[in-house]
Length: 580
Image 1 (cartoon, rainbow, N blue to C red):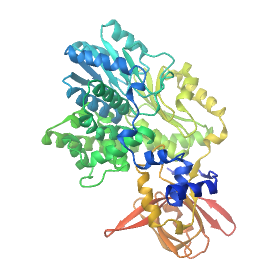
Image 2 (cartoon, rainbow, N blue to C red):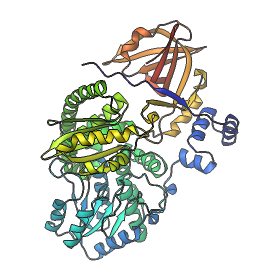
Image 3 (cartoon, rainbow, N blue to C red):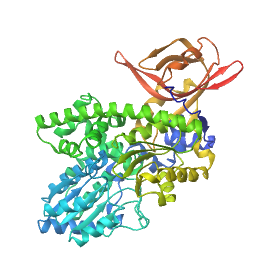
Image 4 (cartoon, rainbow, N blue to C red):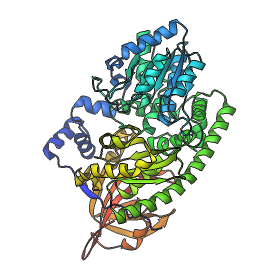
């Protein structure tokens, strides 16, 4: 099968006021290039810069500003006084697992009796359900507290109420027009919310509830904040914007992960070969999170929760090994589905060229299709929705491109959908099998009415620079911008008219290494997936190359040097230019 051609990027560099940025750089005593990035990202006064560069717990917002927070806290205090049992209802992804672990630990320190319930992805589906209400009955729980789910569970909330079970919902997904009937509904995306930050992960909302509870009881937050490792893990894994409170959670929580005392987290780190290393957002995204997610994708998410709550080294090591094996299985299944999905996507593009790719196969594993949808978005530069068979229904997972709000799109075609939930970039969908064609036509009609510019593959550059501007002072200052992620991308630069030095070489499966030079500055470059360009990179030809890249470090024999991670390049041929 031919590999899908990468989308041609349009390089976009936002204009800025040079004199204003120069004054800002001088006043703030920040090197020019980092000052430019801060300015462009809206950090322009001393307080905003301080909060960005030095995240602190003091920067967190008052939790009582969230609607219903007082009611939630009062109900939990009543549960404590009456020795009631609480069912903690989580979700099967990393956000839901870490939120459940955080809540169980946080309530447990207060002597509140709670037990977890995590739905099985394949058997139970997402969110609050009749089964979870039955589990609450069977466990004699007087209260269900959801984490990372429940905001659209209007019917289920009514059933819980009729059953005599109180309900507190904590969630971060987009609410529907009607809020569930509950003691409290904590969600920063509520339309009536005045909470200053709406982009918390589910574990972040859970942390805010525990913070409010501890403050109301006049208790120290030290033990709660020792669990910021869990908050960071769920926040980074859920791909929420790493700005505002999420930046505080991620920054301080990553430090906690690197020195965590949690036996289960230590075992997870060891299984990912990250022991004795500083844990970064990349390490979480590609090392820790996939293993925890594998429990919910390939087996039961309760295994991941059990690991995070474990205090037994032998047990934790055994569970971490199981999760590693599940993750290996997940990768094999993912590769097979990706191969099928790429073929379907290529055929659709060749025959109809839809703006939204919609693919279905009866044998696909529903626990993996979300990952594959992300891969299709990366490969083809357009939204992708994949469906797997679920008895009489199709269960789908969608991912989107920047500028195309998937939740809004699904809302617009809801007459073809049984149920859906999610947010702008990702969503879960259930529909009847016979409605697949109508759904595909409807969502593409919606997409056709959107601006064509939304579907152009864009590469946003922070600045065009000369290589000699990438000095050590500048590079070192950019370390303060970490952790990078959604909402705080690693800066992306472009340099023009570079010369390729020496002989490029292929490494790994299809990656390439080469060296570029401008004036007297020479820097190494890595381009993942760029091996097919090796014959186009002609050495010793002046002004041969325009390069878009991010800064990285190459640690060789204990010596760190600047390295460029190529995002895109333009080869300047004598008879025109070629986008790669």
